[in-house]
Length: 145
Image (cartoon, rainbow, N blue to C red):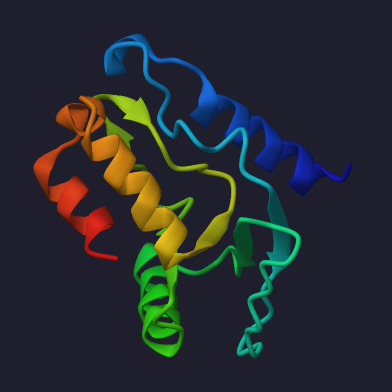
């Protein structure tokens, strides 16, 4: 396991840990069980998302990109692949849920999932108290994608 894989695995472990500030819920209840793969995304690379061996693809984006640049790439890919969801996770923008950090802070990433599977997970979570800890603006931002 290389450094990137190790750091990503540690972040996923962190996202999966129950958090007191979230009433014992993890930041992402599905992170630990999801099969994922990591792909280093070169500039202007043509994407070909393949979910035959993974539920989530973590694209590593140029580390010098600002949050806005990572976000713009996500917007571009969301338009290009409407059946998928691309979520920006920038090391330059710290995101929190009720004071618990949710971004990885080491890499610029774009997380990619099939829209139908992500929506099913969101629907299940909406039947619980999970989203009550989220800031309204951050929740709208995430759910809009």
